Amino acid sequence: MGSSVAIILRLALLILWLLIIGRVLISWVDPQARTSASRILIQLTEPILAPIRSVLPRTGMFDLSPLIVMLVLGVLLRALW
Image 1 (cartoon, rainbow, N blue to C red):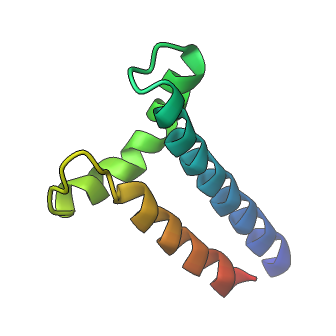
Image 2 (image 1 turned 90 degrees about the horizontal axis):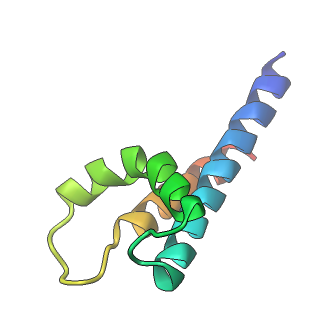
Image 3 (image 1 turned 60 degrees about the vertical axis):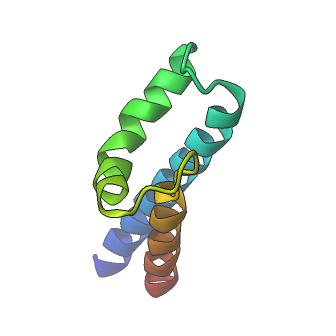
């Protein structure tokens, strides 16, 4: 039972990690979020990125919140592996 919970948790963390990578990549291609894929990625990842963004100091046009979240997710994935 514990093994299946760990597998599901790893899968959820990996999907979240991929969604954040997708948001970063789509922000380079479609920064105004004109497409539905962009809007969906923003809606899925904003609840995770917004609290981190509010804590980080302003860095001009660079948003470091995806980097912080991806580092934390990477540590969690390593701990569960």
